Image (cartoon, rainbow, N blue to C red; front, side, top):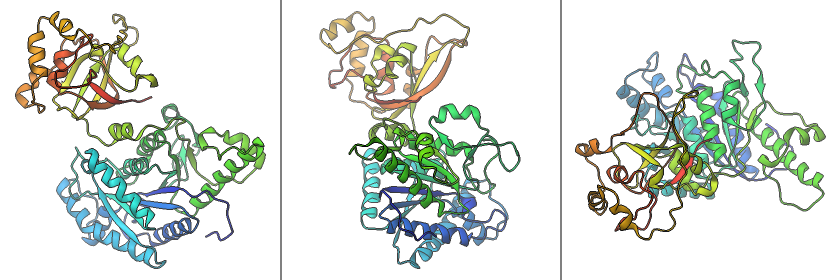
Length: 473
């Protein structure tokens, strides 16, 4: 452990450990040397003024050891039971190790369902922030005991990314059994090359192979880390993949980027504020300093972080259905000035059954490459909502539209599903998800007004059918 005085900028750090870093893959014994090193690193970070959140897997792995079971079961109920058995022992182990340094901890168990409602999400955010302000280290894990597929985060890589987004962390460290992102599995391919800096997760996917990494105990692998990096960097969080075998590298990495940022200010010769990592030419600045680079891969955060509400909509809500839009609407929504709001003119159809206020997938319909036939549609300017009834009256179904839209019913029953089915589809068309948003109206209502140039609901103050839309790059 380093003891020299370091020039650091205090911030909020999220550290994620997978099951393979916590328990032995075959014996399921806790890897005490790694856990102790993690604790020492966290305590050291706290002494430097940082706030630290630990996202810890391992409950099922510890449960396997407790029950002397040789391998992870396949049935959901058995995995949930093992999680219930192992979680208490896991948090007790962490608390014991941190207790050796008089560092207090707190357990936080989450499912996607816990934060799918905005008030509960904000309560979770406030709880974590309050714990950090009290000098406590929150230890977060997914509540596998009650999780089902519809409310699972999928893996703790995703959970750690969402956690870092929730609290606007400065860094997310994904500790794994390799020291960065490689073009192939370095354990099997001697030609595998480590990628030091990633500016675009979408672009890097074509350069790397992610199918072979991961352990028999864990649920993730390198692909889930790319997904996590995409979520976290979109929220403005610098994301790092590094080895769990030497957790103290985290301190070296933070110190490394702190010095690069300080040097960037010094070389500018101005009293400008400390620059953000995404604005620095890392290679150029490091060439000037010639600093030894700790082994890791860094994902640079987005230049314009996603707003909290959009991040919540895009990553924490389980979509209840989908809205199919045309290419013109997609083009407009892809522009930041659109405000992430969808007018009915760009809607081609509705998939699934959902209520007002639920999250929906934004699906774009297009023809495959080499097939022509769709003329791009542009969204009209619907700021003027006057003469609405006259506009509706030109539709042969205007009375039924108005009756339905003025209904107080917001919940869609299974019997209504037939009204939301997509029409005018053919085998030639392709539909793909491009984003998510919050529906202002239910699926039947949106199905009735799709394609209309203008409308206004008698009891509502918005002409947008979906808002807070996040279009993914």
